[in-house]
Image (cartoon, rainbow, N blue to C red; front, side, top):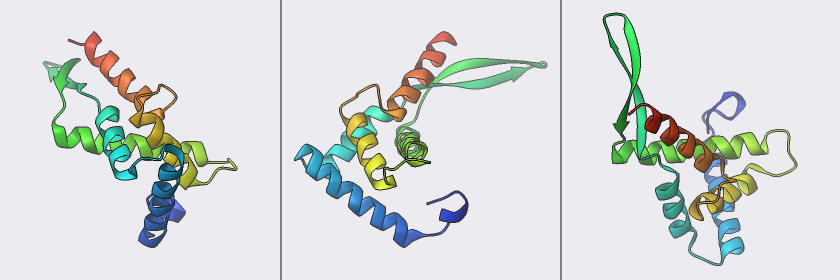
Length: 128
């Protein structure tokens, strides 16, 4: 857990993940670890753009994303989406994270991570 009042609370993070996996099992009747792996596979962007600067002119260049960065970005996007969904909401962070993981594993567009991945890949395609 990061950001302000949640910083450094590992026990709270472990409890949230346990509740999330319980909810995923109840919602999908599947192994929650496999659902999570599918979500990480679907939510990681395959292509990104980087800044290439020479002689004072900076332009964007499309690049492939390494496998480790794909996993890290996917996890970051899912947690960010869950955090934004639970902020000022009646749903708990565990419920929002479970929804985000299930939507991402099914490749649905109402997942924050899938929306951001599509946006990143669209920008990279424009900068080829």
